[in-house]
Image (cartoon, rainbow, N blue to C red; front, side, top):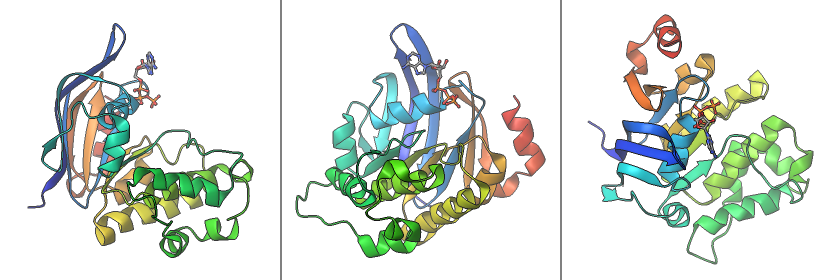
Length: 236
Ligand SMILES: Nc1ncnc2c1ncn2[C@@H]1O[C@H](COP(=O)(O)OP(=O)(O)OP(=O)(O)O)[C@@H](O)[C@H]1O
């Protein structure tokens, strides 16, 4: 049995008076890709933001590497090895690819840390070719690759990834899928993925959670789930 890197227990959070997460419980095992699916507006992004500490939890518990991190702020979580790649990528358009990558080093307390360029460029060869190009001049798919690469420069143990395939072409989605699998299986980096596209999610996912109205309504390992079952789950 693999160990868990992240455990969420009965987590609730709100924007002001408006409660979005209503007691979400889930677990991410080490070296796996765990995917959260569900329709628009069910609270998937809010879940990732609450885990990261960008939205304060109202109640419940977040455990990372067996430590209670429920109220740990985001900057400390990134030092602890949790990286968050938000929906819409959020790279800095006026900085070059290399400068964007350098921002990822902020997650490390070692001020002398260097970007593991060989490793990053082996995974994302296009970023080597475009090293000096402005981030804003990359295509959507290339920006997504840059956003993931930037998160990896901080050498995280857990990657929180919000809809990486949104608005990007299928061939790049596929490449990203291969990379996520490799990160999990070869480097032991655990991934908590929020995704809407079953075609993308199914081959990369080890374990699925399905959300509705701010809570997990079903779950299961990818091996046990047919495409049809997946479709049924997300049309809840
Ligand atoms: N900053 C905010 N302030 C107030 N309400 C918000 C805020 N962000 C999101 N919401 C609301 O919270 C609910 C859940 O949004 P969230 O983005 O977490 O859902 P989601 O499942 O990720 O949806 P999507 O797939 O569209 O991103 C929605 O009703 C949304 O309008």
